[in-house]
Image (tube, rainbow, N blue to C red; front, side, top):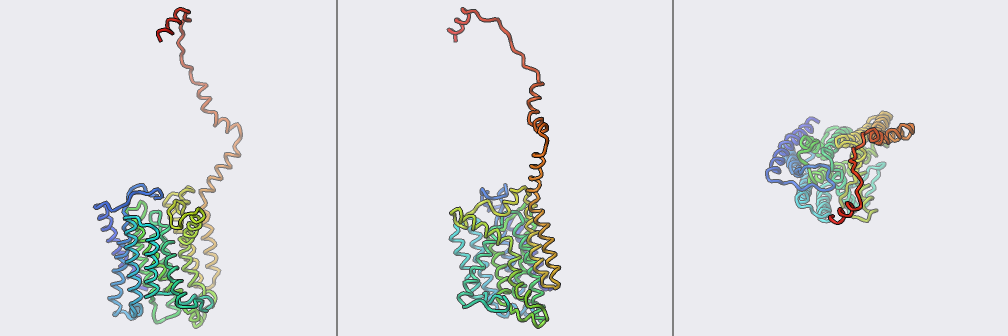
Length: 421
């Protein structure tokens, strides 16, 4: 675990330093787009933070590969380097597409095609869903089905992460929490299924992502100086999907029987936990696609009706909306992780209490509005009339303006005045 934390720290330091460089270069050469109608920020802000995150991740993988021969446990991850190279190659491709979109605003067809190519590269040369650990039975029928499921899962997660990238620190913070929980889970899982080696590709990716998000967050915190842009959001989505697939698609649930655990919970946690850590992006993505298709628009057309927009419209500040997202993500992901430790009532209690608290905080502005409405409805009629007509009373008490009085005009004078006018 110490080595994983060192990788996370290294990634964080490099990403933080490069984020400052990218920020200053972007300001110097004015590498920032105009503010769009759906944007929440009011000042032009650089959107190339994804470059710093990618370079930090690349350096961390390079260091891990270089020192793998000195650490037998880490060497297992790089014994077959083709999955790592496939992941980094796909990451480079998706970052290039994201940067191009951040600068020139590519059409959605081009971006989607690039996402499928990147996901296909990972699935073809690296990581695939070979089986789903449901009751210990394989449910993937063929290699082509495995390839297709992997590609669509990666593209889905990339777009889900990108869809929630609308507030300062939102994606970086949610991803930091989600990957932190997933890192703990992969470590515990490896300890149970392979006591001699606590390392896996999923744990290395999760640790590096934790570092990248932590290193980028200081410049992305409200008020943000730097955005990760589509490049950073796609990159995070790609790596999160890849780490989840490498666990979910390759785990053997029967391994838990050797350590005396119940078969039911370990069989489903590899599926439930990745969904739990991604529940907020997935929910926002699903609602956005449904909303746009119902309106007869492209599912990738931009609008201002995402969950974070709705929270702000409800009355939350931008910072409060981000913290609410953090809360939902932490409760769901940590709650699912607690199912790894019997008795399970503790996990159920944690999730129940946490979800109630999150719901109360989320809908608090609506409760305040409803309370104000009820107070207004219950107020005595004379009180309402007094408040409504107070300004008329003030006018009645005001002194009347003086009116100049003149003698009545004679018919001759009136006729003369009419002629002259």
